[in-house]
Length: 450
Image 1: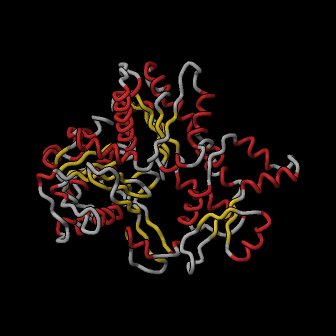
Image 2: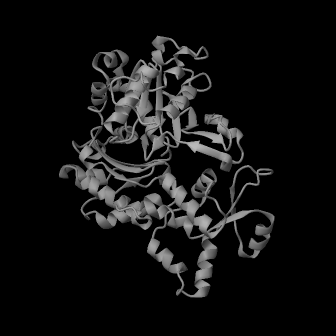
Image 3: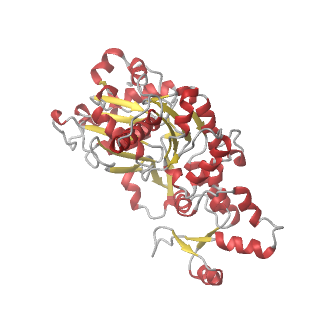
């Protein structure tokens, strides 16, 4: 459902679901200063409280129903369904932007209520992530929902990359202080380039002193959803029909795919002409089996290493999806979107464009402080390949450093949780919203760190 124009949420059709009448909600004392932190990802929400070391809850940001049935399943309800091919999903996000608020509202009611966070919105501040350059009507409407439908006491909204940049700068400054290093003005931790590669898209966000340099923000329209769909199509054409198995193929992608360090050389090894024996040896080295669940003895797929001599026996005993070249061809789309018909450059080109759009005095520091966040950066070889590609494109007098933190999926949430504790100026109160209106408040939120 497309949101209405700004000017009130009375026509949203959501008022019947307000959680202020939920008698199961646990009311926390006002003096606790409860702050709920929600990294509202298009695939999964990461939720917890400011001061927590990590998110308390991972919640699927979607609804689903069994084929032929009318009842919707939300959150953990979907865990009771073994065969996910029987589910029809509805996702509130479209191309990275939150567009279906009827679905999102029901998911939030469950998340904020007695089964999860157990908060009273009237006594709770909310920290919420939002995609960069979200269209103004969508961003304004989300502010209306936060204050009018849920009635939160205060709210702060920023892109996840802004919170990631804040956390990176904070940790680097602490490390330098521990080492006794003097911080130079305008360099080092003052500037950071955040690469956020998630479910719907990949953003490159240069930041300086906590503020995103908007002129340098770049978006690559490749995310985990596109990669999973590509893997589905590839294996369905070559082996089993997996077009209805999004979750299963997503598990296979995360378990088996990797980023090649030299894509051209890898492809040359398996192309005809390199010699039959060499081609077979290369395919054998690449081949991995993903054993499909039978929903009787196994409920989820799992990886099994394949030996050529035992391949026939494995096939006879279990239903197996064999993956070879697609293991590195699918993630390659992050670096070469043109391979699937997208008319834009890949991630290395986006990084260079982002940095070159910034002030010349920041470029060296940005190239030297690149931090990777989001689920896609977990592909083995991702950081090394990006460094190699950038070193080719970046002038030699700049140092290039690509850092992959151990918690790339939670990185933005942790930054938001810390910022909520120590930077109260990022919040806009319900009383300010009531006085000035949604459009003004939306501008106020994004005049700061984003």
